[in-house]
Structure formats: C-alpha cells, structure tokens
Length: 116
Length: 110
Image 1 (cartoon, chains in turn cyan, blue):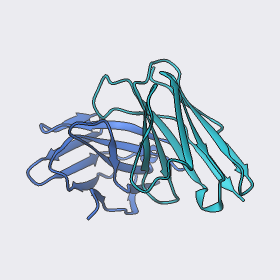
Image 2 (cartoon, chains in turn yellow, red):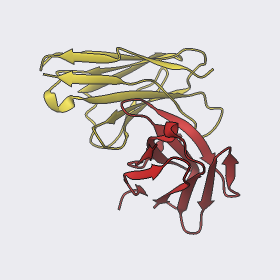
Image 3 (cartoon, rainbow over the protein chains, first blue to last red):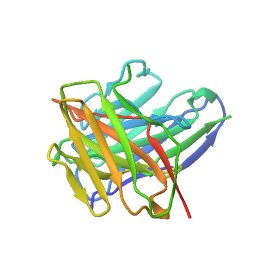
Image 4 (cartoon, one colour):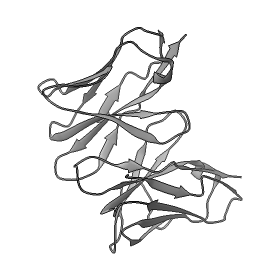
C-alpha cells in the first residue's frame, strides 16, 4: 500500500515552454501533498504544500506564479513549471500523506526536468 | 545555521563493518524524527522512525537525544545493498512538513 506515482519520469523541453507534472496517490486518499525540488548533491527542498480544494502554500522564495499547483482531488496534484528556463532543471519529487502518522510521507519516483 | 545538519561523508566502509551516522537539529520544537534512505537518482524512502527510547529494526538502530538535539543511526554487519545516501529528517510541532538534512553518503566496499 501507500504508492505514489509521478508522470512523466523524465522530460526535456525548450526554454520558455511550460511543463506539467502529475502526482497521484494510487491506493490511498492523500489529505496533503508536497512538492520538493532537489538539485544535484543537495538536499530536498520543500517548494509548496498542497491540500485538496484549496490554494497551495508556498515556501519562502518559491514563485507561485511560476510554479502553479493544482490539487483537484484527494488523489491528484499537479505542478506546472511555467516558462521554464535552464536554471529550473532539477529533480522534482512529490509526496503525499494520509494523515495517519504525523511526519510520514510517501514519495513519488520523481521527475527529472531538463530545460535546454 | 541549517535546521538539520549531517556530515555529508562520503563514508567508504568495508562490507560487514559497523557504521554510525550523526545528525543535529536546531529547532527544539521538533516533534518527530526519521531516517530516510535515498538511492542515486531515486526518491527517498522511509528507513525508520526515531524514538526517544531508541529503536531497532534488524541491523539498524536509531537513537534520539532531545536534550542535545542529536539523532544517530547505527548500521551493523553492513551489506553492499546498504550503499545509499541516508537522510536525517525532522518534523516540527504543529504541521506535517518535513525538513531534510543534506544526507550522508555511504558506500559499502566488497
């Protein structure tokens, strides 16, 4: 149980285009989903917290107009990187929590974004 | 000061040896503590939670010292498959957000 999927696993795009990443909880309802970004040899950095039916809460320094998050249902959250630039190239990982155990999050396999 | 600090390593350890990692956290309001494991270019996976009383799961033992704000992970009889980056993770009181350390990279040498 507690499986989280992400799609796509890898994307290469041109500078200026927008990229949408989907995060799904497959076998549980996720009360909260999180979006992280990880640069090479760096730690995971939380970008935003997403709750179904409400606006996402962004961490300091993360542009909400650039990283659009939609949490349409209890099993799906999407992250759209708008007008992507090479510096946005990174490993984007989502996680979900069922609320059963504080601090327990189930991570998706990640999406590797490369912006040319 | 970083909220969660770890020795980045790398630790290169012969198979069968015992290895210990340390982690310190700065927020005294931190409530829950975890060790996650991350393989190269993969997502993190929960290894174990850390309790004040200490807890053991097979070859892995985790300890928490709230007074010193210090967390440790001990791996006994290390296996080649233990090679990974080990992330110290902290959850603060009142929310579900996790704060990750930068990780300690471990390589087990045959």
